[in-house]
Amino acid sequence: MLTAAQNQRLTRVGPGTPMGELMRRYWHPIAPSAELNPDNPTKEVRILGEDLVLYRDAKGTLGLIEPSCAHRKANLSYGIP
Image 1: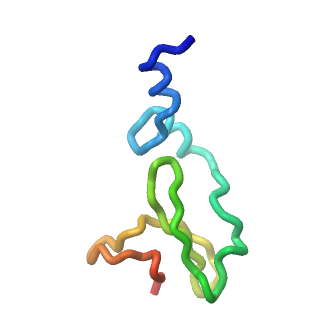
Image 2 (image 1 turned 180 degrees about the vertical axis):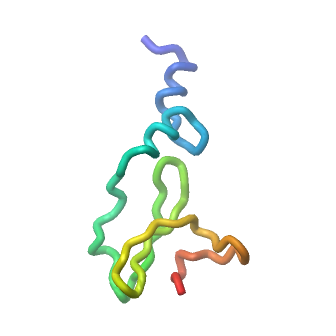
Image 3 (image 1 turned 60 degrees about the horizontal axis):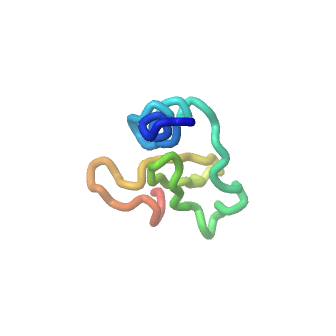
């Protein structure tokens, strides 16, 4: 049986946690690519304790970024220029 501390070590996956750092080394399916199209090119997602924005650019390439613009803190889930 696990102690409370061992359980927390194994189940916490946020940034800076041991399991979070391990899990970030691997690919994770987060959404079907068909959900991103010219009419709806962005999708807010939460994975491993982080809020991110999944997007498809004008060339059709998929990307995953932090939700806020680095210099103006604008919410990028409304669209990527």
